[in-house]
Figure 1: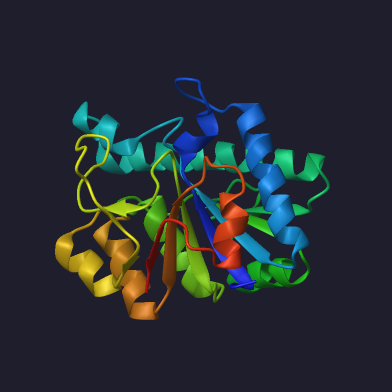
Figure 2: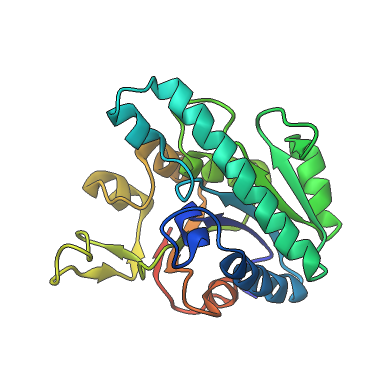
Length: 235
């Protein structure tokens, strides 16, 4: 294995499968099976999941909603996704804990760094939900923050149908060129949209590597953990 402890950033939109929005149970189960394979190799896995399949704060802001209120709604969406991931993992025998940055004691544990680390050491998958617990921060920033706190070796940025990092949007430009390796400095200088600038700066300042890959291709999560040359690596 290339990495012993990983932070998997899952796109919320990947959980909707082929539906227009919401959660597709079969798609979630497919990802759970892949995570189980990775865990079977001895890898410790933390997961941060987005909420874009249920609610997008930026869209709500554009409609005139207060930004903070919209962001809190997005945090609740990540909790729903996290519970779906936990359910799928535990149905196939993977012990899982959901830890939330906002208080929802009836359905998850509160996020406590040392407890999260202990769960990982005991072989449990930990799903971090509720973002950072504060508005104005994305789940990308939450992923960078949690990766730093649990001393993850890498953040695996699972994208929904995008192979890696391109010089421009490949869905709009046929001549877009994919980068295979990048530096954190170049990501910030070029404004490449891997993650928001706050998250990118946090990764750079803490020396956290990134692997950006298409998580919709079966086996790609395992390949990323093994260090295979897929997607884009940022160091």
